[in-house]
Image (cartoon, rainbow, N blue to C red; front, top):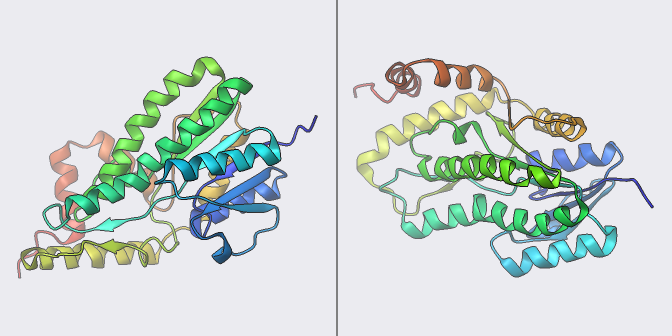
Length: 272
């Protein structure tokens, strides 16, 4: 019987997902990646790309069936599929907010449910959910994106406790700014309100400056690789330039102080 571990990584079209899939394949794992449009995905040696829309139960079931038919098991699930919705809370329609959660949160939930059926039967497995520093602290004009990641954080923490008896390990990776298509592929709310425009533009400018100095996706892939190797992985891992210091400041400073620092950095209190 083969001892080669089998990994499934969602959202491998580019960026973090593609880097994670490539790194795991280079380490000798049998890797399946997913995309809604597999024909558009760059070929990565050792990675087989399967069609998957995490918003659809039937697509998740078909993807898992394909993995089991070819590999017979699943050792590692990396939930990476997601996107960023930009806009003030008031600007964002309920339908847009629901769509954000459908991919970023419920998509991960669907994948976990399918994976646990296999992992509990095996008596082993590992689930790694890709969250964000935005799951620990909210950025204005990214409220629903951050809310979807906050939800993923709480869900994952509870899940970790529940599946420990089955020898299934659960971790979160929480990247800061990473040099991917995250910003260019951001979806703006369809009906902006002009009253918010000055502050929205300042946050956008500040975000662009941060991403100009962003870390490469490889730092996330290397972190995932270390988690896979660790016999007792932690719950949370954050990485990327300034991510660690932001998390520490958020944890130790009084919120009023942290809030003032953030508003100053984003230019939110600048008078026209």
